[in-house]
Amino acid sequence: MTSKNNLLKKNFIVETINLTKKYGDITAVNNLNLQVEEGTVFGLLGPNGAGKTTTILMLLGLTEPSSGQAFVAGYDSTRNPIQVKSIVGYLPDNVGFYEEMTGIENLLYTAALNGIPKNQAKIRIEQALERVGLKDTGKRRVGEYSRGMRQRLGIADVLVKDPKLIIMDEPTLGIDPEGIHDLLNLIKDLAHQDGRTILISSHLLHQIQKICDKVGIFVEGKLMASGTIDELQHQLAGGSDHVEIELKTVPFDDGLLKICQKINGVLNYQWSEDYLLLQCEQDVREELSKKLYENNYLPLHLQLRGISLDSIYLRYFQKEEGYGGGFS
Ligand code: ATP
Image (cartoon, rainbow, N blue to C red; front, side, top):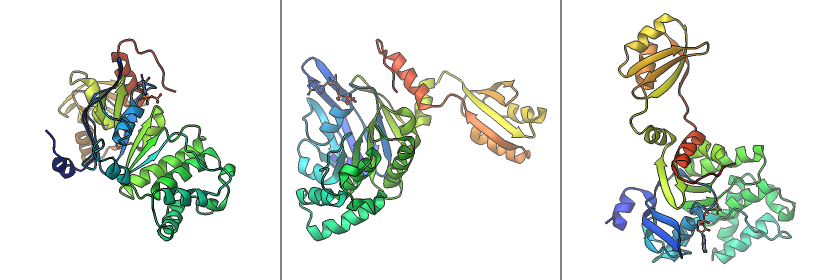
């Protein structure tokens, strides 16, 4: 049995143990064992109805598990909801603000609700607005904000509480491409620069892939796989599939083939106009790079084939009988 101390030692800010939620005959979350390391961005990915929101509600202590446990920073979410609330900031998919009030007034209101003294709140609000790039906009009425600005204000609203963990539900929904780019960079910085942990629930693969350190693929209440994109690719290969590597170098000649053939694990090759395609037992890119360097071959392109979250998703979902949904 994992104790609270063990959880803290491993620096998992989120850990669930056999977490299960049933609504009558429906098992919304099924024996979930999830671990999220501190200071990382974790993407909880899955189609509608997969059980993402139910998981979040249990983490927040807003709904009780049918069985199993959810911990945030070592606190049991069911037994210590107040401590958990003080550590977590939650950004729902549609943040509600008072339209007639300015951004700053809205944030002051939330700060008051959270019992933050006004002087301290003002300092935190200024810092939070600056962090999300709304320093000048904070004085304008929220009714005039774009959807992207509202999301930023939502993040500022969460930051005023100074949370260690921020949970975001579909943060990029309805935002234009440029806004999405900026928002994703901001989210990444909140983790990698500021040391907060971000748990994003989403079905928007392409966007989330860019910023997540790890992802969990959730289907019908079950976590099908969890890890970095590379790890998921490895799991997908199941140890039996071969890895394909695309390689283009300067020079691009027969000498390149001789270098590749000497590397352990390279099984086969095929030339194309654009690159040399290597079939390998495992990912040999590190060894390959060294040998290329030693032999004065400059790698222009050195890439594993077919690693996209999309392909990983599709593979997992195809394994699920009866799943016929799409993602975008
Ligand atoms: P979405 O992105 O659509 O919100 P989700 O992945 O967040 O999907 P959940 O909302 O957690 O999924 O729902 C998981 C399953 O549990 C669904 O089958 C849903 O119908 C069911 N469910 C969720 N909340 C309740 C409830 N209060 N009562 C009964 N069933 C529920």
